[in-house]
Length: 76
Image (cartoon, rainbow, N blue to C red; front, side, top):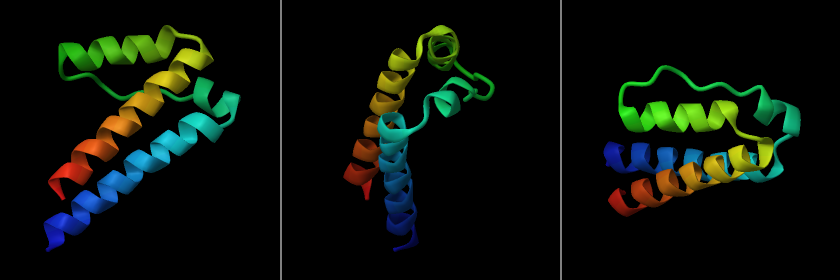
């Protein structure tokens, strides 16, 4: 029961990330920074976020939020 609630909360956070990527202010998205990278995929994603223009950042954040919401909805 608690696992389903936790997965539901994480899925809602993915939806909020998609909302932020569409309706967030340009300055907030440009000033956003990612944490440390533990794998090659995360390193490449962090570099794409860091050095890309705002439109590409919005697209990447939307795809990330969609993936998070989809995966955690399937498992809950």
